Image (cartoon, rainbow, N blue to C red; front, side, top):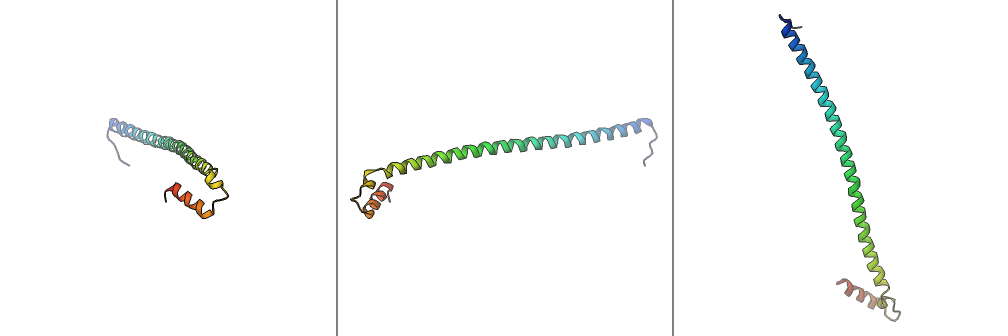
Length: 97
């Protein structure tokens, strides 16, 4: 171990080491807390993002289903006198193929 000639030097080294250990301990605690806070924030953001995405998908599917229901109730489709090929041609014209 190092030998110091004065008490002033001994106290300076001891208090310096004590302050260094305290700073390292506080830095570790703050790092751990900030990591936990960031993780919680990301989880909450992802939950909200999935909620909004599912609402958007649901709305688009409802829109498509409403369009299909309206088309299925069309007199051109429900008419028994038209053949399947004629109905298919009508549907292709609706879609624009």
